[in-house]
Structure formats: structure tokens, C-alpha cells
Image (cartoon, rainbow, N blue to C red; front, side, top):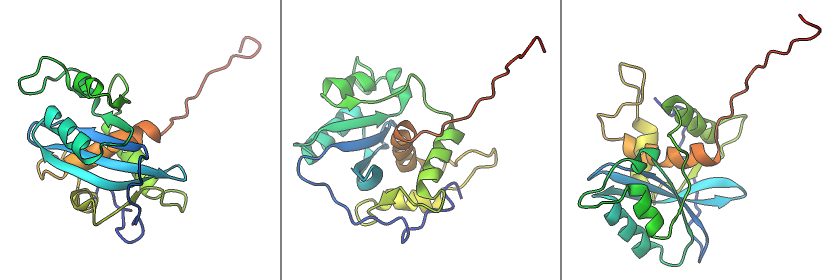
Length: 194
């Protein structure tokens, strides 16, 4: 299992979206299979409270977000590769379309390594005896299924053939951006010419 410590009972959330509160949306680009996981923050921790899955393309995803959440500040944490890809019948990149929709787009110049994104997710699911990532299981059934069932493929990466990857990848972009795994680096210091 890619997310072995996820437990629908221990990571459960009963939170819902409050009036006018900011929404933090992780987004994965895939034509015909776009996914977005909507989070709210409670005491600094992410609670997944809605999902939008199986959307055709970026313009359709923008329309769905605007229709469902009209009075909220929207912070989108997308797949960084959206800066290079074009949506169907569009001359702008997916990231440009999100910015043009007046969403706050928070993205690094490149995606984190898959292992780092998975590690960030797993640290939020359960680390140091704490479960910080919470999921409203009734509102996010595709996301819960992916957290419970996604496994590794024969090459040691998260399986992409089952179709379970879109929701967890979407959430992972938000989690790894806001709660990154910080690596310690060693520095060589020379003292007295040694």
C-alpha cells in the first residue's frame, strides 16, 4: 500500500465548508480524468471536505469550482506540469487558465519527486503519533478509495494503471506544497586547514 497508515476511522473528519472561508484545492491535470480535492484548514491542519473527479479539462474544472464555491477565496495547488500542457481548444497553459479565473495559484517551478510527495502525504496521515490529515469520508469517496487501495507497481512507484492515482495525486500537490518534507543537508566545514 502506498498509504499504509491511512485509516478511515482514525483519519476521519466531520468538517464541512463554512461560509466564505478560503478553500485549498489540490489539482491533477488529466484530460477526461481531472481531479481536485478541496481542503479547509482547522488549527493549521488540512481536512479534505469535497472532491471533484472525472472532469474533462481545465475550463470544465474552473466552471465546476466557480459553480460550487462562488463566495470563497480559492487557492489552487496544481500539478506543475500544467504550465507546459495545453487544454483542449485552448491557447493558454492550464496554469494560465487558473490564474485568468482569478484563482490564487500556488505552484513550484517543478513537481516534487514522487517519493517526496508520497512521504509528505504519509507524514500528514500519521507521524509522531499524530494524524493531521483528515478526510470527510462521505464527501470524498474516490479519495478515500484511493488512499485505501493504491499500491506500488513492479517498478516501485505508485500504480497508475488502476485509475486510483488522480485523487491522491491532486491532494498530494497541495500537501507537499504546504507541508513539505524538509531534507537535512550536511555541510563540510574546514577548520584550521584540515
